[in-house]
Length: 126
Image (cartoon, rainbow, N blue to C red; front, side):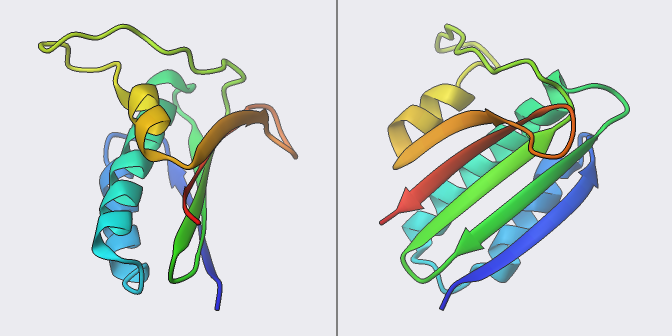
């Protein structure tokens, strides 16, 4: 049985924590390793939307999941496409897209359907 949730949040520093908490609360049927990856990647993508999107702004997080897979789409109001950055062992940022490459089954960026902006999405699991 597939489930879903959508969150519409102000693009503030507290948004990633809110999304992490909501995933942990709602996606309890996911295997722990899959949920851990979902929480990490969602936090990275939401953080990117907050840091690189317009201020003030809003983000939309749409999540669909079943017992073996999960899809997350994070929309923001910026049309700027994320670009991988080089990072080293002491860099505080720049690893989000690298983590998507390593952990996600697939991921990408598409224009937002109804408004200005973009959606960064990823899939985990089957």
